[in-house]
Length: 84
Image 1 (cartoon, rainbow, N blue to C red):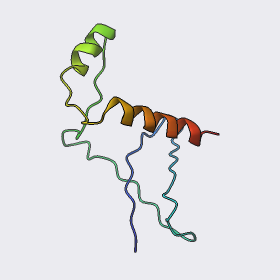
Image 2 (image 1 turned 90 degrees about the horizontal axis):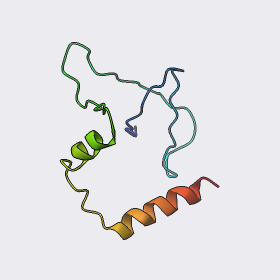
Image 3 (image 1 turned 30 degrees about the horizontal axis):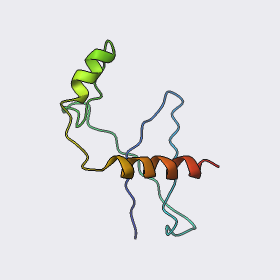
Image 4 (image 1 turned 180 degrees about the vertical axis):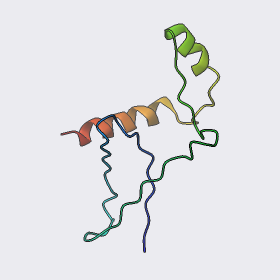
């Protein structure tokens, strides 16, 4: 059995959509949705910001991805090209 793990946001419409890798097999599959245990501390909290200055202050405390501007631009181009 093969497994793929994705992190997704469940919207108010209660729908989740994922695109599997091209090498994923076709046919019958089982889908499992796991939610964090509400009695424990959340693994990742999405911060809320009152304004852009507050967001920028938080952003400057985040670790670097280690990617160059060129690598990021290439990823953005590839993503935009996949929309067509």
